[in-house]
Length: 109
Length: 114
Image 1 (cartoon, rainbow over the protein chains, first blue to last red):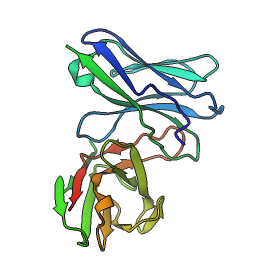
Image 2 (image 1 turned 60 degrees about the vertical axis):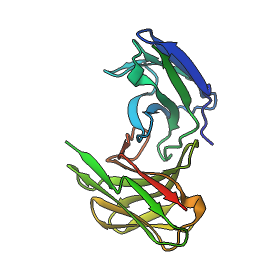
Image 3 (image 1 turned 30 degrees about the vertical axis):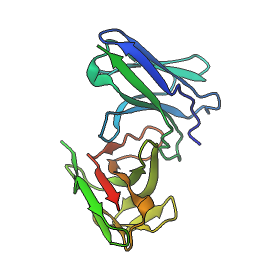
Image 4 (image 1 turned 45 degrees about the vertical axis):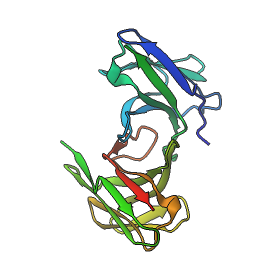
């Protein structure tokens, strides 16, 4: 049980922002929200994580709803190299990472 | 900096043959180590994890086994491969358990059992 819900796939144009949604209505107060992505024929790579406040790093931004029941991964300017499967994962203190099916992001040139 | 190695990169094995996949991590000590499998077109499935030498936890009962003979070495084995063992095998490491744990994945081994 991945505890998160994501669209199966999304499309975006190159050089435009991409907003990848994730619903996690059963999130508990101590669960962190993590995002990983998996490029074709590679292992997953960490993107970003957060608890309550929005987070920014060199790869992306994470916007977390005030009630924490949803979050959005934001790629500010998508490139063809951002085409990947994006996984939204909840982690509690004693939880293991459980990868769901993720969102397959297609970038159109 | 830390790096993780997996070999071989690809492997084609007949049904019933043994398997040994190796994973090594450099640049860190006492890492948590993980083996995942990803069947074609499917999500990642956690197979084993280890918090220290000789300590192995199995997540899914099957004909695979794991061993950690050294601090930064994790080995996935099978005595007799099945067709259903085909997939993309990924090793990962981390240094902290808990809600903020970040896992770092290796390049993977693509196994085809014929």
